[in-house]
Image 1 (cartoon, rainbow, N blue to C red):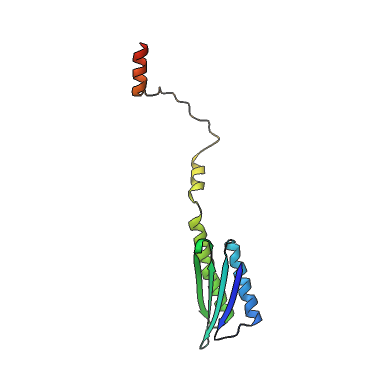
Image 2 (cartoon, rainbow, N blue to C red; image 1 turned 180 degrees about the horizontal axis):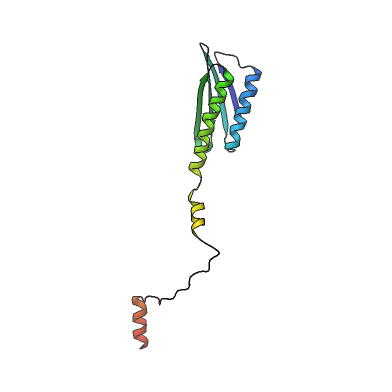
Length: 133
């Protein structure tokens, strides 16, 4: 996955860059088909903000934003918010009914034998009349 790390009003240190990469790699475990990620770090009057944007398939974009007293905490909070979004996204595209249908059908039980005679259709009645039965 292509990852871009940028800083606004602040230079991104190597420690912060490595920490952000670890967080993005952790998110990639939830959704391995993500195409790109962008981490933006911003400082405004001692308020550190981190925004993580991940593009998943079909142009869908998920964003996690957080602010904290230091940049590492802000990255943690943004990663947690994005992890929740990724879980919900994955659940939405998963077929939940597949398991329920399989539980309803008992494959070990023998198939019931039809004891009742089959209802005759109009064509069956006409065919019997032609044959003279």
